[in-house]
Amino acid sequence: MNAEQEIAAQFCPESASLKVSPFGHGVINETFLASYVKKGSDLEQRFILQKLNKNVFPEPEKVMQNLRAFLEYVNAKPSNDDALQFPEIVTTRDKLDCYIDDNNQYWRAISYIEGSKSFDIISGVDQGRLTGQALGQFHNLVHDIPLKRIYDTLPGFHVTPSYVLAYRKSLVALSRRKSSTMLDHGMEFVNKRLNSCSQLQDALNDKILVPRIIHGDPKLNNFLFNEAGDKVLSIIDLDTLTPGLIHYDIADCLRSVCNLSGENAQDVDNVSFDLEICASVLGAWLNETRSFLTLQDYQYIYTAIRLLPLELGLRFLTDYLGRNKYFKVEHSEQNLERAIVQFKLVYDIEQKEDEIQEIISQCL
Image: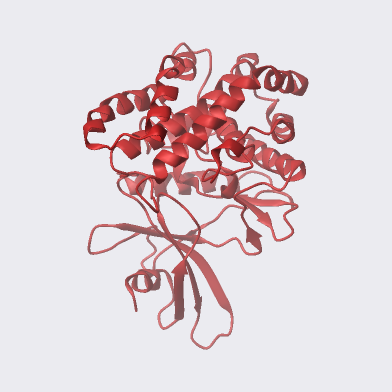
């Protein structure tokens, strides 16, 4: 057995025939698909095995406590055939939520959603509508969870001024970075916009906006569709569940879905914010959430749509300056390239502010 198989075996019946292979394209945790067959059986069963990134989640046990609290809460609510499915916790042979290896690394297993697939780029407005609807259904399930039931496992997450501070601190690394046209462009772009990065946090601090439980990372490939791509079965990657502003979720979803070139676009000139997809996602999301949104919530939707790609681009740029310690990269310049993609998206959103505001008004 290799190391991953030995870990996966902790979540399987003894003497099971086991296979483990890398799975997905996540940039935080290490993820594997494990499949096994019990001794004396022909039925193959599968689950997702992950090593939680302790550099990102310094208290992984609280990540699992959040997941268990979430599952207990939503599973107690009335359900129907169209309800979202969520991965269940697969415990170890000792009935523990996590396995801690000899290097003090945390491993966990969750059930695999059979018959599902994810997409990195959306196919059109129909999938946009389904994505917005699913995110709205998710928010309907969690908006009334008492904040005290969910730990803040990522202090400072989506607190954009803290990312500005981290970026400013990272500038000391410039002397160790070779200057380039791309780097100069990225820094010039973001430096002009740093003063606008506190708008959502200021509204939260001033109690204009209220915190709720949010997903934290609802990018497109965290929505699991059926094989035909015409129904959302699940929303996964619940490690970032946290108290926060619902604006972060809908804006991050739009950031991901409305950029048809993808986060790793090869030609930045092709990166744009698709208004038709935006209307389909936002309209479906608001249909599911309007019962608990406030007038103030609506007033900050555009602010969030513009801010989230700026925030992510700032994080990519900061990680690049800090030698790529947070996001996984395939080559040393990838985080800089990712940052430039997000900045191009911000620029296009700014050029389309009037159209986006009109879409928001029409959805009211």
